[in-house]
Length: 263
Image (tube, rainbow, N blue to C red; front, side):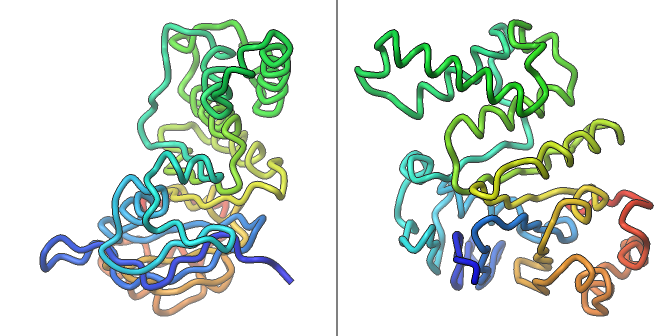
């Protein structure tokens, strides 16, 4: 029986009368690959911020691995294993690929002991292993400014993994990628160990349905449905939520047949 890693119970974010996220409850099992989708303005990115702690909840609780983290600030959640990639990169462009990942690893283990040569050598070995994992080992000494868009997204995953996450939140990781780059990204994410639980917001449903083991559909800030990719694609309620967007029929198509903007 799966253990719940992330639990949201009645989570809400209100701006006066506007309910950007309204009474959302989701349980994400440890090791899951869980996707959040929904029409524009559904509340997906806001919900991510409530999980990471970059925005406070108006109501409800956020629980990580059995511990209530609702009142913890973002940096303390990160120390407990919550890591994320963002829609917009925050990389050090003039520094090398390897140094960007090394900085993240050093931030995770800040102490005087981390300055010892033996610890520094171990950190560099780990960084090289992460670059192998994301397919950037040949680019270790390359300035980030020289990377392609797809390679930068791969680097962001390596940086997030350097923080040793239990929970990895990916906010539109395939944005701006070519189909070939998206396919490589899916392969990379599929290869991550089960010790890392993924929650992904993504506009490309090819990526969502290829990767996700479960999907939550948000609509007007509320959970419309949580289920398997097949259940979501077949849901009349989900199709109705997309009526008028010209996209509802795509849920009935083969997941490899099209792309759809749902951010």
